[in-house]
Length: 144
Image (cartoon, rainbow, N blue to C red; front, side, top):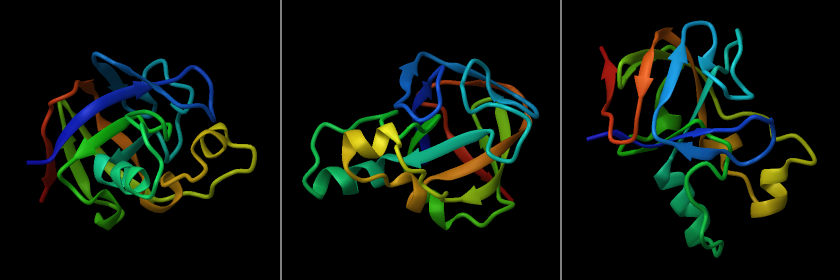
């Protein structure tokens, strides 16, 4: 079963995010209170724990949820293999995959902290189609 491990938020861009008990996701916005939220195609960022584990297995230790500035840390689904346009039901929300990976900018605090950033290769971005709350433990369902 695919599920949410953590909901993460930050007030500034380019820094690791901190886990919260739950988050509210708005249409045409994303996670309320997050620096990356806004009316654009990358409203919500997702990264699998499996991707974080690859970096940890490569010699980095102690990397955990939010360190790659992802809004949702997930488990049980290979996010970067989902085609753009895939619709997901996560908690009370519905989202659509809009982008796989991203360009990593220079001077990124995450890259400085970690030495590598898996987000450009394996993170995905979505836009919110149906608003609602998401909390750790919520199931992730691919909508056919």
